[in-house]
Image 1: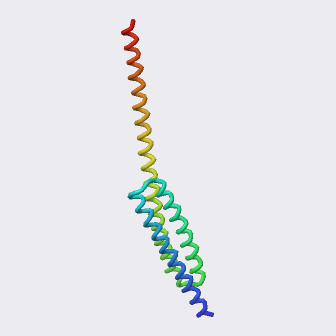
Image 2 (image 1 turned 120 degrees about the vertical axis):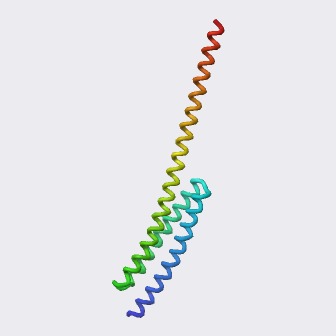
Image 3 (image 1 turned 45 degrees about the vertical axis):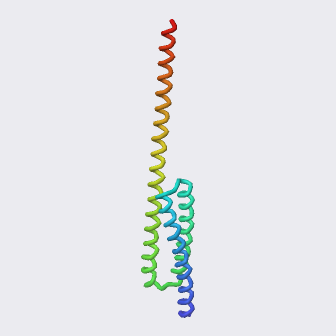
Length: 134
């Protein structure tokens, strides 16, 4: 029974490790896209990372089902480290989106301000033209 449990735990651990590899690749893709890509690619990469994180969590939970109580603490440290990596990537994405949103809002406000100034100049020019006609 113990031998079978150890074999199942080892298989679950291998599956979990494969999921971690996918998570790491998706995290790296997200971080790289934040440095060089547009918002659409970043959002897509973030969605892929969230999916990979969900898979890692489920595979980890499966793995821990086969562990003895004293082994679970080490496994908890493993998932906590990954959780920190996920949180860091999420924070980078949120910061990027907030920065882009702020830049776009500033650009819109500046464009509106320029348009308002243009209309005011045109109105002043019309008033000058009308006063010269009289």
